[in-house]
Amino acid sequence: MASDKSDERGLAPAPSSVNSPRMTKTNDQDKVDRIVSIDTPEQIQFTFELAGPATRMMAYLVDLGVRSVVLAVISLVVLIATGMVLPDLAAGIVLMVMFALEWGYHTVFEWLWNGSTPGKRAMGIRVVRTNGVSMDLTRSAMRNLLRAADIFPFGYATAVLVMFISKSDRRLGDFAADAMVVREEPVKLSRLPNLPEGALSFPRGFASKLGLKERDLSLIDVFFRRQNYFLPDRSEELASILSRPIAEQLGVDSPNPHLLLASILRDSHDRKSSWISPPPKPGGNP
Amino acid sequence: MKKHHFITARQALWKRLETLLVKMEAQKTSALRQHELEEFVHLHRIACSDLARSRGEDLGEDVEGYLNMLVARGYKQFHPPTPPKLHTFTDFFRRDFPRAVRTQSAFVLTAALLFVVPIFFSAYVVAQNPADAYAITPPETLEALTQAYAEGHGGGRSEALDTAMTGYYINNNIGIAFRCFATGIFFGLGSIFFLITNGILGGAMGAYICVSGHAENFFAFVVGHSSFELTAIILAGATGLKLGMLLVNPGRFTRLDALRHSGTEMIRVILGSTAMLFLAALIEGFWSPSGAPSLVKFAVGSFLWIAVVVYLVFAGRQPSRHKDTIAIREIRP
Image (cartoon, rainbow over all chains, first blue to last red; front, side, top):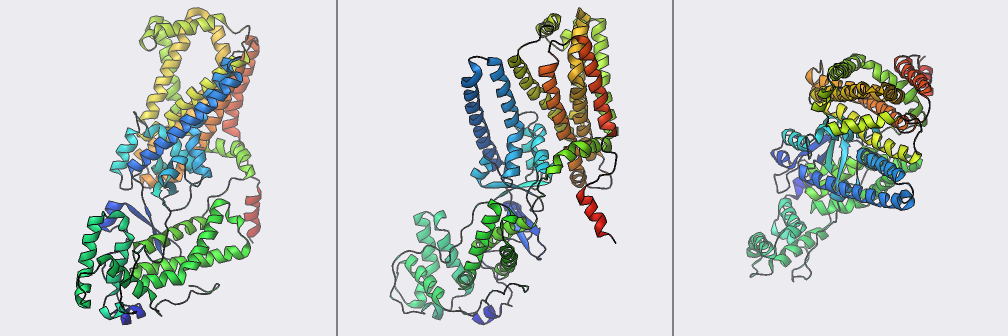
């Protein structure tokens, strides 16, 4: 790391790099990615990624399927239990179940499951209030009763129209309940990305002599973390672009580009650094 | 590489925070012991400063995304929704619902006019010329309806059929009420439309049956449940009108803020009128078609009408006497 000095002080302005931080609503990228940021009392912003109409439609269809199956099963049980003798009683019970499912399903699930329903859970989305906290019962009720308006005149046409017009992809029920639907996929964090097996015969610490900057290393890191998104050919091409100047500097003749990059990452990972301070003790302000 | 050092140094803390979060999300904040809560607060702050750090140092979107998730989940735990208490339910009917209705009494009167005037208008038209009813309802439906009232309910009917009809009423009537409310978001137009059309329909059908000579059977049937049913439809429509008015003329607020401020009150009225419609469906399903003599039905029906009006006008006017309000009084010097 050539710029170790400034890095250690942690005062140098962050260089623009492959990972542009997404912090405020005004970033151009956020207009595409639909990021909403929220200020906390700790004087920090965290962000939510809004769920789009298509994802929400899918979640709705999954919920519709679940509702239909539940209704079918209950109807069958009721019919077997009472239908032979008292078909009217069976019809009454089924109608009441139908009502409860149509108007109560979403509200009750969103209330008990912290803003989620089976469909939403399957699609990795969740309802939260626009200030980032969980929904309560009255807001869930408001959001879901207004489906009667959003569905107007058919097939949630109003909802789709309003979502396209609104900047934050919200339907009428969301506006009235002060809610938004956000993506909430589980995030896993591993220290090193998955690196290809095998080693090249370089001495330990060779990477530090290359004069690679922090941003160069994080570029390699991101390259490996995004392997799932590349086809093999494309990955090969990118690896050779990334590794060519390094290979020239080392004076190596066309090594396996993936392995070269991986050993650089491993080598610089092994090095000790005093850059990060130990975490603060409980009781004090971090 | 900074990123790797950062993750190595902090990962144990983040993992611990995640464990605590999972525990809190699965159960409740109160599931944590005192020292765990303090630990959670401490770790949440560390995660916050680490998130700021990861952005400032540009450590990559995976670190940032992970910490962002931790902070978002922790933040939610700091601001949990108020859990429903036992007295919330009783308080709702004792004071919150009628009070919420009275805060929008102007809309209730407007909605009542929008509903009742068309009833009388279409009833008058059909009474003059019964064939006019065919313009809005197929003759077969009207004939079947008249037939049903001609037979009367002297013999009562089976509980099973009562259940079936109750289920139908719940589905149909509460659906109508919800639509009456929700379509109010189109600047009140939807509520106005549904109030007037339901009024016209009801008036025409009622008048047609009465003109056919079954007035006593008809009124004996509807008098029991109509107090709850018609009032609830009017309340739902009134809330829809208020919803529309907030969008047409939000006053000093932005339209969204106006919705935000009145949302709870409006939902209270809607939940209350839903409860009324449930009651109405039960009465309509089990009591109205029962074999009780007309005189008894008229007496009970009149009593219910008076009870509903008295309830909505007078309930919850006395000041609340609850522990939470007492606690506030005690804090004051």
